[in-house]
Length: 386
Image (tube, rainbow, N blue to C red; front, side, top):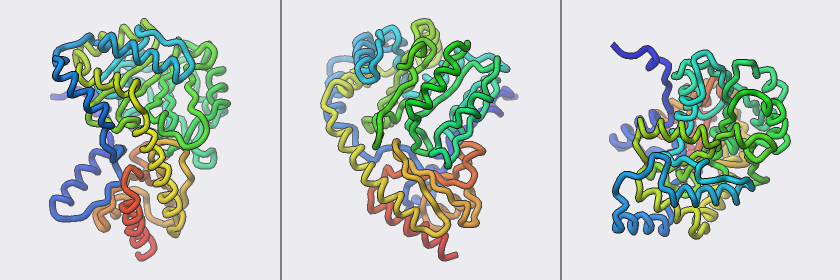
């Protein structure tokens, strides 16, 4: 009755765990939410005011599929200055959230039987989209001993004549790892002359605690074959606004725009007007949010490392930790389930991010220090008191 490809379409476990947590809360259970990747801050007031102003000015109608011309212009200026590369408005496509950039780009590039290399553990939608399209999802293992970076020799071994897409993510979900310039330069050397595209997911690029953010698109010979995926959800606490964008060559941008025409028509017009204010207005609220995340990171990492059988690296970006729980003697999926059902602490099993996430949990520190400490205390009770 239903298309066979639906069996190949995955999901995002964070939303399933959130739904179960809400069920428990409805029964009166106090749940500490460390599962969902959503800033617990309000959208900066200047952005919200810009949206209200746009509504009052009548930005309630259809816009061009690729995005409002004035927004694409500002995004091109922003990316050019921020990444140090030349971007024109024709290179920019605006979408309702950043996920459509991944989905539409993959639709435009991948044929059945093509290879697409993606990070594992990694954002689960990468693998889901690749397999849904009938391509082969080739996992690129991220190892704790490499600080969750890429093993370049292993990466090279994954490249084949069938490789048509490579997905990078830095800062990374779920590990908080950051790719170094030297790693990106080597990757660029290996793929520069190949007939493929690199999709670089940079949605956490402004949530960086040490070092610099480097986009592979800025390296010699890479801009034409790189797709930058970015959005407003994390940087400006705008998850519910659904505002993302991609930067790519003009030909691919035209294909992605046409796919958007067929799927969503366009992105909400008044949201785009608010997006202009986001990148041209004051950035102090965003900087304060990142500073607070950094403070919470220290609490989270120290607390996890003090629990028997748990070890946790310090993430350099995003707002997640990916602790190793193998020495607790409890399977990570069972541990995540028991934490929620027995202790009211919502976390994710590492396997929600791929087969190489086995033995880990992902916790988000997009919650208050008080709740983080309370959640860690309950976690300690379960692990050490069993």
